[in-house]
Amino acid sequence: MMRSPWAFPLLSGLGVWVAATAVFWPLGHVVVPVADTAAAWAFVLALGGGSLLLGALLGDVQARLLGRTGHDARLRLGVALAAVGLLGDAALMTVAGFAYPALAVERQATLAVFLLYAYGALAVGPLIRLRRDG
Image 1: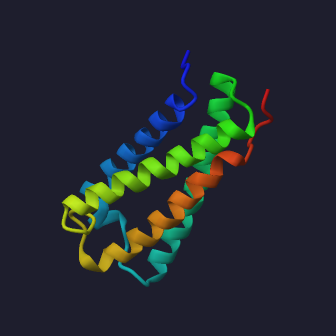
Image 2: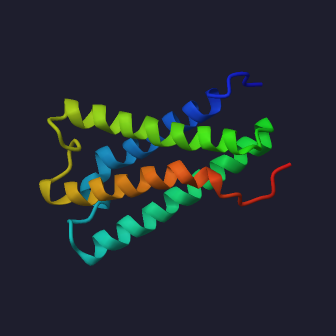
């Protein structure tokens, strides 16, 4: 059993960031649309909404598996999900010359807008209860 109230949130944040980076770094040129197109709007809205759902699901997983059902635990999870992702992407983009690696210039803005929505959604997503706690 995880004793630290930060263990699950931080490990979840790291897992989400690593999984997303494992997709966007090598496949960004395929999955990220050129900015200011209908495909870019759809990409941002769909994946932003998916991030909200992911946050909600992780909040329910935390409640179910660890018995952490209160608002404090859900807020802690949201903070950790957003902070780990923001810091991870900031570090990645800094060492890659202030841009997302292996992503064409015309796709950078789409990914940047998506990341802003995604991290906001991950921050508040755990507050959405998909299942009744307890």
